[in-house]
Amino acid sequence: MAFDPGQGNYEQSIVSSNHPTMAQQSLWSALIEAARPRQWTKNLIVFAGPLFSFRFDPDLWLGAALACLSFCLVSSAIYLINDVLDVNDDRQHPSKRLRPIASGRLSPRLALVAAALLILFSLTLGLLLHGGLALILLIYVLIQLAYCLRLKREPLLDLLCIASGFLLRSMAGVLGAGIGFSPWFLLTVGLLALFLAVEKRKAELRRVTESGVMTRKVLERYSLPLLLRLESLVANSAFMSYALWAAGPSLGGASSSWMLLTVPFVLVGIFRYQLLSDPQETERRGAQQGQGSSSEKPEEILLRDHGIQLTLLGWLSTVLIVALFTR
Image 1 (cartoon, rainbow, N blue to C red):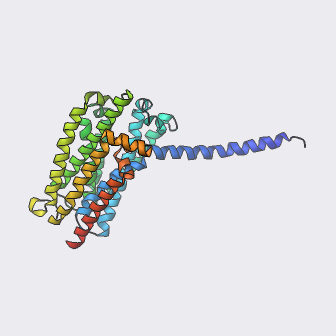
Image 2: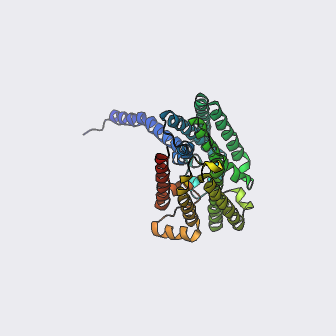
């Protein structure tokens, strides 16, 4: 059978015409990956205030859900901006070099445009919901930009910036739902966030010690003994502030002193997290499972570790039972 050159050109044109669609799908996939939707689990702290109010008004929870959505949008924008600024450092990191911007699958310019749009949408949504929420979102953006540009290289200040994000999220949930809050509640959230930040730096410092590759400049200013002292101080303070909040209205805390029933779950959760951050435990779990859960990524521990999940389930179930019987 004779070869028809026209047929070959036709088939090539079909492939070429489909190529833009495939490229667009790959681009969208890279953009979504760079937005880090797995990190959105951090934004669930927005619902803490409404949950502890023991109120089940649909409008209240709708406001909290919209506040959570606004933080999902703005936090993804910050991740995009941070990855653009850290592209050179990320390319030296054993795992971060695979991120879309560091690997070249997503251009920095497109990432910055997407980040600007996400911030605009988030602030607009916050302003429509509550003026105070829009202010909190703006403060979050400014703090995180300062962190990306400078403060992430300043010891201790970098930890406070990380913790401030969780504190602002909890305040956003309170404002979005239109409810009051206890100072003990905010103090507990801030201290627990500091605890997670210290654990994150501990895991990163150990990785640097093992690999010899300095992935963050601020790690040069930290030592393991210092982080261990900070960990002890913050963990003790967080547990004590939660216990004082759970003691009930007599101390300006929760609306019911029955919340003291949840204190053991908080203690077990802190113990479990510290166990998972222990280098020997990490090595043992990595040898058994092929990969260990590292406190360098708190969201991964939440998604993978059954002990943490069961602790959270027990804590949440107890909170709901207390809410139902004290309404």
